[in-house]
Length: 329
Image (cartoon, rainbow, N blue to C red; front, side):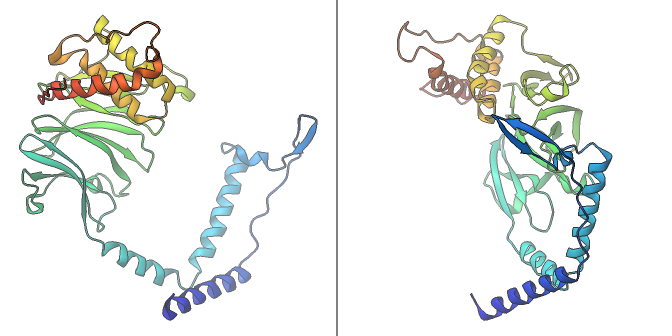
């Protein structure tokens, strides 16, 4: 380690210890006698009352601890200098593009500029020249807090519109918005509950661009503890209507086939992405879908073969619906 860095670290640690020694004592934490018996062993838990975040006593304890910590950190003599140096280093990082997606005659991408708190959704010309960058959605302009972020996006096949899941405060509890690519204006109403960390979320545009399939979590019809599970696939049309996919046997079959596989890996967003694409196959430009025949008694005739079979089916479906037919399909 360079001598200068060593000295800076030593100075920081010295200041921290001095400040800690001079700081007031932390807020006292009360004890409540709670004893459980597990397999004949008595276990005491005097701090269980802290698990109740909704209680007034628990909130008061948290606020007191936060105030104590804030007072200690703010009093560090090197804090502002370190903050200034780190901010300068972060903002000096080069901007970057990620999640590039071609659609129509343009390329969509997430543009992350360290000068701003949140990454933006932009488009580039077909040759991906950075000079052609045009902002479609800047989450930094959606609120003074700067805490609105893009979870994911999906452009229509012609690139004229783009669907974006937005969430606030790092919650990843996404609401779906559709934007006109050319103007950046929002089109139609927002759709809530399309994304959550338990299983993510996804969307697939219809071949004609007049609607899209998307994943959605339940609302008030389910108990609060279940609202981040039981994901379903909906279809949304340009007429701004939504319906659950169960209007025909082909659609129900496709959805159930994917859900059967997804049920064993409910925490994996990719399985729901397959569910959305397989359900999409039940309608649109390729007609009804029939599950492939299986030989009775064969090792791969059970559910454990579903992932491989669904990957093959949905890959072909996706190429067909998007107009990119391949010989493998």
